[in-house]
Image (cartoon, rainbow, N blue to C red; front, top):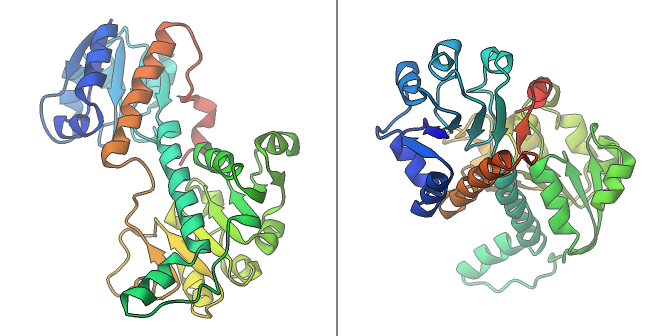
Length: 328
């Protein structure tokens, strides 16, 4: 079996360690892209020649008919990243090529980050740390435990569902809004399904795990943000476009809410953006997904998916044509 890795050397070296490359070589003949930077269509065409399996990632070009005609036996594309939209083409579906991504590996990191935001924000560590650094010693009167509270989860994809799994270790009520998850499935996950407005009114923490779609654009508008409880912690590790930032700034300026934002729209925000100055906002530079050593999760996922494919087992990250319109 021939395996072609299309992403540039600078990218695959960050994700795939020597152990992962050795595991891939145990499964087939591995061709690596030895040039840095994003491959052009012509370069991708040369790399993929004769391949049975292609590995793609961030920065790879679409696998057009011209690219694919050089790999008539290509059966599987493993995308070592999240959304497959940048690389998937109609020609792939017509040829019956299967596609799988690494959203589960990425989602775990996102969920863990959201949990970290949850704990640290409820503990009021951000404010207390600033006070102690300035010579004070806070009284902890605003500290809350992850106990006997309601945590609202908006979106139960890979990241949202793993966040729910992590929350089940705490004595909290978990409520979920996701139009694609039924009440029974929500109960199986350990959550109570609610409509979005009801979730916003009842939650002490709201964690957003939505894709960026026309249907989710600025879903968190002024009206919905106003529904949230005083002292609610709003966490967004998904996409900046799901929040109306102007409306959020207006609501945060009242001092009612606390926000942890790993994403903005656009990224980065302007240097003078109010979100950079408000005392009740924590901004991080899109680090919730896999970064640095966490990128190894993606490589591990790719190797696992290839082994599953060769063993005739289901692919955990498989993406089907009919799902494309729901993907970020």
